[in-house]
Image (cartoon, rainbow, N blue to C red; front, side, top):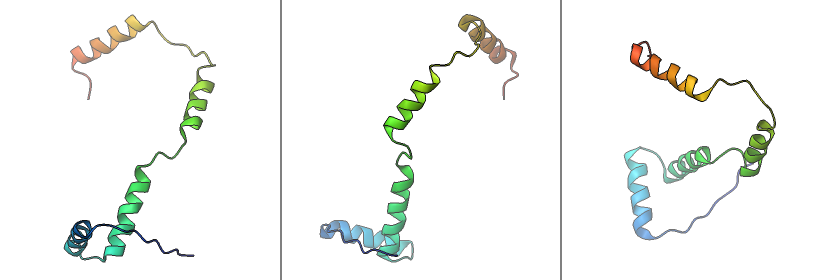
Length: 85
């Protein structure tokens, strides 16, 4: 099912949208649909609460990790050796 969306904008903004749509050889409606789709893609897919809950759950576990100074030294050695991509 499709829905109609009405947006009120000032004339200068409308003319600019019209110009861009014409340059891309598409209707204003198609340009707006694509712009809205792109805006939706940029929105976070998870809520902040869900992300925070995942972090809270993860920090309950203890995983083995090396000494930080030792790990940093190994990273530095790798950089100095020139063997990194």
